[in-house]
Amino acid sequence: MQSRKFLKPEPIVFSAGWPRLTAGVDEAGRGPLAGPVVAAAVILDPLHPVVGLADSKKLTALRREKLYDEIQARALCCSIALATAEEIDSLNILQATLLAMRRAVEGLKLQPLMVLVDGNQLPRLQMPAEAIVKGDALVPAISAASILAKVYRDRWCADYHLHYPQYGFDGHKGYGTARHLAALRQHGACPQHRRSFAPVAGVLR
Image 1: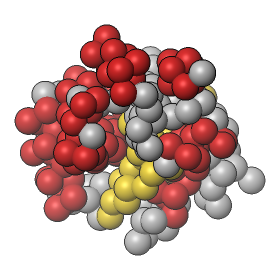
Image 2: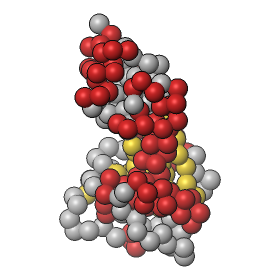
Image 3: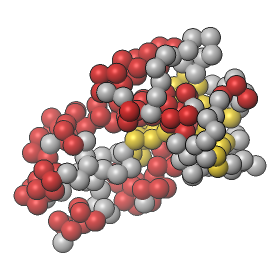
């Protein structure tokens, strides 16, 4: 049976008490009005630590890019998965996020003995898991997962911008900025907009 333990940010959590094959899981892209939600799972190698891991939101874009490559090179294994805008609309954003997380864990080439997930919700998994509030700032493996998910999604937005430059995805990354909302009013929704999100639904009425 899956363990569901919710930890507060204090005291700081250390990974020494968990099994060596512990995966950290985090997501990027729950709030935007368009595009997939992306999840990553990472099993770090204690013999090849990655220096400078932190919550991806606290790092510069350049630092995230450098750590993205280093995590991929040094970790025992990594996996990145997503749930599409269509799945978000059909399932809701929470369930789509949990689906992306499950896919990320299932995509690992090594099966973890424990999974640590950022936040207070857990996907359905075949192994024990713990949800850790603010885990992306407390657990290195979750920090690594947050970086992979963030960089992957930012790259997705930059690529999609080439197809639909009128929306400015390379800048706002799909979030509901004034520029994005103005573009929605002017051009309507594109195939990647989340129809179930209120600002998009309002434009489509």
